[in-house]
Length: 65
Image (cartoon, rainbow, N blue to C red; front, side, top):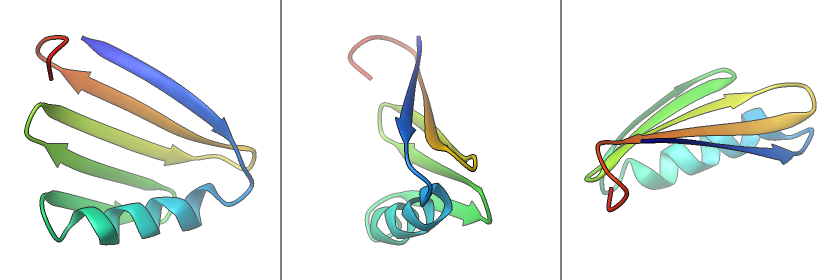
């Protein structure tokens, strides 16, 4: 299962860094520049910042994930 969310913001890269620094206390999370990835128990969240948006692409094996 895959879901994508686009959030309009000009601060996407800043938010990716903040989210990954927060997540890394509990789960595996990495970021570099305009991209990030967080490994949750139920699936993976890929993050990408563009000049106008923050894009989350979430992948899980099923809807529960």
